[in-house]
Image (cartoon, rainbow, N blue to C red; front, side):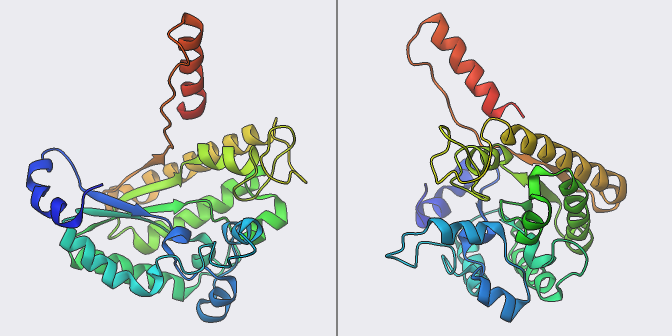
Length: 281
């Protein structure tokens, strides 16, 4: 990681063929995710990521969650000023589904739209290109409760409708879109290990309290629905918005470098299989 002064000095050296950028997610950045604050002040709905953080937090330290974190909800102007001073070209942020559409579908929250409009405009005013992630693990809890979230093919239509709102409201200024952030990680931690939302797993695979879930089958069901939702949103964007907005759209995959245990033919083949299995989306 570059220090701020170092990056500012070396920016022209490393610029050739590159974009200097940072990214943050809605929850980790601290976008006023505490459920009481969201509902009372911003009229957002609760999301599964918020609830899973409460479930696994250290009971001796209530700060072990994303309630405040970097407090980006209130300090985004200060942060963007620091981005500019650092010499960044772009910033990737995630949009909260439950902030934009509190009930997962239907009525849109104007305060949520307003927040992202302000964030995007502030970035552009400072010469920083906004990159938006549509989904980064924070599924509206109401959809999880209603039909199992990503376990159900019903998620495809709801996700596409949510993506449509994002494209319509922000696509005149956002021209780089990520549909799903690291869905392979979502599948692994949420439905196999059980340590991420929605915390589903089964023994002996899960690392958490596997009171519900099926680590053998559910990860594949969720992966399938993720790919269908991604494809549906991309198709919508290309058909309805891309000609006018001239944007790019894709998916972000978590990459782990897997190396063979030894130089044997068997271990090398095993490492290649593992790499393909995890990242070959």
